[in-house]
Image 1 (tube, rainbow, N blue to C red):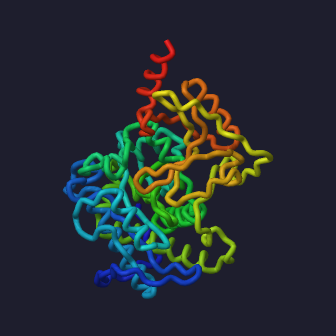
Image 2 (image 1 turned 45 degrees about the horizontal axis):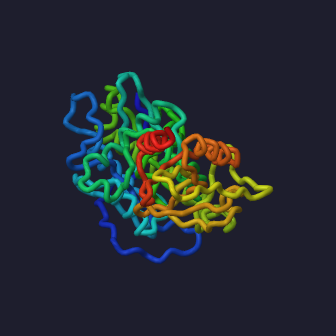
Image 3 (image 1 turned 180 degrees about the vertical axis):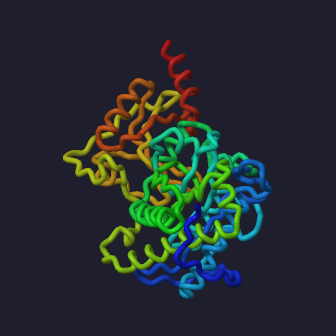
Length: 389
C-alpha cells in the first residue's frame, strides 16, 4: 500500500535552466545539477518487460519533476539538468558539466534491478569502496555505460568498468565533500521511508564513476527495483514518480536549510580534497617515511598508488600521512599520487604494506614501463619475473 505524501507540490511548467553560471556567495546553496541516468541508446534497467518504460524514462521524469519542485519553492536556486531529453550522454560529460557549472550539489537519479524478483527498496549512494558484493555489482552495472561510448580510452584512460583493479582505484578517490554527501543522502532515505513508505536500503558507498569525479557533494539515488513487479508498478506511474520526486525535494529543502546555517568552519568551506579514510580519518604522522628507489635501469617499475584527486595536493609528507617523496602524475583530468619504486613485485608488495600501515588501507600496486607509461599489473609481473630467471 503506497503512503501518501503529506504535501505534493504542483508540477507547473518546466522552467528552462540557464547555462551561464551565476556568482555564488558564502555558504548559500544556489546551484544544483540533476542528472537523469542513462538515456538514448542506453536504456538502463529494463524491468520485468510488462511496460515499455525503462530506467532512462523514469529517471528523466523524476529528475525534471524534482527540478520543478525546487524552482517553485526556491526561485533563487538555479536548476541545471545534465539531460532533459532522451539522449545518450557519456558519464564523463555529466561530471564535467557539474564541475564546469560550479554546482553546489549533484543528484544522480536511477532505478535498480536484480536477478531476485523480491529485491526492493530505495537506496542512496556516495562515492567510496563497496562494502558488499551486491553494491559492487550495482556499481559495475552503472559504470558499464562507459562501454557504449566512442573514444572511451581518451576520456577514461585505462579504467575498465569490469576490472576489480579499476574499481579499487576508483574507490580510493578522496573528496572533501563526503560528509555533506552523506548528510544529503540520509535525508533522502528518511523522506523515502517516512513520507513515501519505501523500504529503506540505507546510505551506502560504492565506486560509481558519475559521483566519483564531481567536485561538490554528490549522491546517486536508486529509486527502487524495476525487476520487482510492485515497485515497477509504482515507479512507472505518474503518482509514484510524483511521490519520490517530492521526497527528494523535501530532502533538498532540509539540506539547504541546514548547511546554510552551519558555521564557516564546517567542511563546505574547504577548497581542496582531503583524506577521508574511515579507519584513519586524520592521521598525525610522528615521522616521515622516505620512498624506496631503484637504479632506474629496469624495464618495469612497480609503485604504490595512494589516492587520486580532482584537485592537486601539495607534495608534502603531512598531506600523505608522513610519506615522503610522493610522486604526482596526470591521467586525463585526474591527479594521481604514487609512492616508492621497485624492480620486483615482491618488493612492491612490501612497499604496499608500509603504505597501508600509515592509513591508506586501500593502497595498491601499479606498474610502468621504461617510458613511464602505465601497463597492466599482470603483464608487468611476467616481464619482471622473466628478467630475474
